Length: 380
Image 1 (cartoon, rainbow, N blue to C red):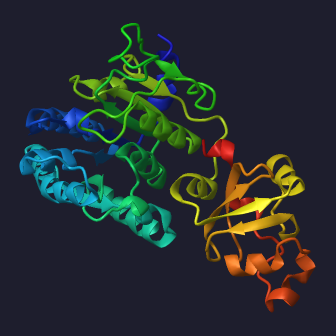
Image 2: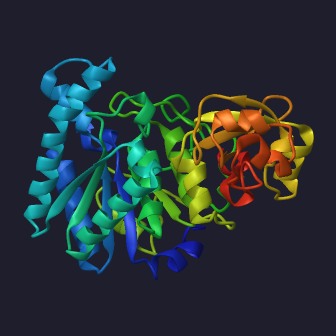
């Protein structure tokens, strides 16, 4: 049982964890399954009574609203209407199940902007910290009622990994409708088998077959693997486990029992700021650089100077995230720019000593400082 060789070292010091529950676990075509929410609330309550802090990330609002409205949700507006209808039902069931055990819950709805913008991110973190200190269980969902494609997280698996990093959790448990990470899609391959342990999230996830989303959820195993890798790069281990199997949470937290797939935290952890750049931000534009600049950024840990820039794409402001493109037009990294697009256009290809003369001011010698740059291998 290879999991057990590692679980004790993860579980013993564990103080805070994030548990994510997917739509396929909580619902069926007729709507939410109250009995599933009930048994999950009982398991989470038991975890908190053991002295651990839990942040719950839940899907299910759109699935619940779709059943209530009795119609498909093909357009953004229809999904938002379903979310507005279903979110009430989803929180009512969670609140009822926890209230029966003397637990208070709090609803937090987030969009991509809430985790991307530093001030809003900090506000969310402070709110979550205050709730935990008061003995309240934060219940987090993406704000699908207002989110359009530009500000959507895309899936609650991704949201859960970002939340785990925000609250400095030590473990992320993703409860799915499958036993864990499999060697293939069980709906298409009868020989698909469970992978109980992934020790290297960099190499261990490459080549895995990732099934598409099911009818009730927005993401399949591909998004779970993406979320697990993001969490692992923040130094957080991940367990992907079967959510409808009673006792799955207890088994995940028991160092003597094996369940699902354990994905160990990466050996090389991204610093908090670089993890934020890598996974929470979206590029507002792009800078194409010459071969020398690309090589210096890739292999020598250098900053991007104006002399290495060949082309400026898009409209971005100082402090925005941009993509870095090599001589072949391929993205190899992302970073925060010190100057807006219009000013980068004026200084591209020139020496840093000329910046003040060309712009009438100077913020820094670098267009992107190496501390504000991450390589594509950290984003994959």
